[in-house]
Amino acid sequence: MAGGSGPRGPIGGINVTPLVDVVLVLLIIVMVASPVIARRGLTVSLPKTEKADAVKPGDLRVVLGKDLSVELDGKPMSREDFGLAIKGLAARDPGLRVAVAADESVKWGDLAALLDDIKHAGVKRVAAEVGSRGAR
Image (tube, rainbow, N blue to C red):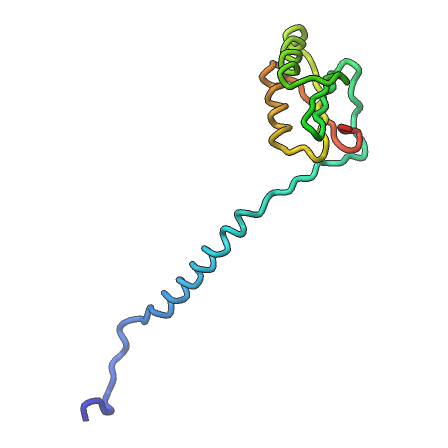
């Protein structure tokens, strides 16, 4: 008999087909899941404090409102006017301190742009107001 019983030798190779099948299935799962994970946005909530230092009387207070309006010590102004005003104040007082407050609904990018304007004006000391004492 051609295919009959007889002594069989040891198997010299490993069947890699099941291994390849498992790896391909895992690859497909990762490829399908990665866009879902990447689309998920990062939600940031502003910090709340129980006790915080009050803004000192000599500090400038900058408020960024919901509609991205800017107030400098209670005076509303445009972003261009704000940039000029803060640059002039920083030139007169190198130790100028600025306290920044923003509404909770303001996007981080808009707040970062305001902080960048303050930094480019030459202000070295910037503080952030947090909690319910923030913007109106």
